[in-house]
Length: 82
Image (cartoon, rainbow, N blue to C red):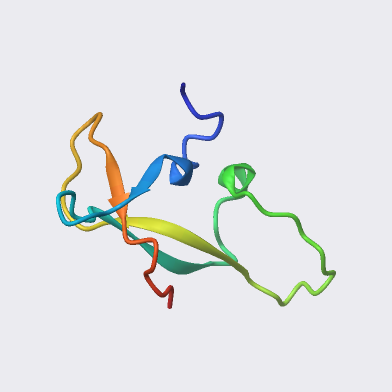
């Protein structure tokens, strides 16, 4: 099935193993204030504070190597995000 949100691929990531090495990792990302408003619709976020100075932090997937179309994604579920 095609995801509703083209940026929401996290649900397709499986845990790596000795046989299947990780090809993606998790990284925290602070969305800059100048982020294009037309792309903010793809960020799964609900504002719960009226603090306009607060930033939006999310976790993104970063490839560890080139990924081929249709290739299964693996990460280390025990990676510490920093």
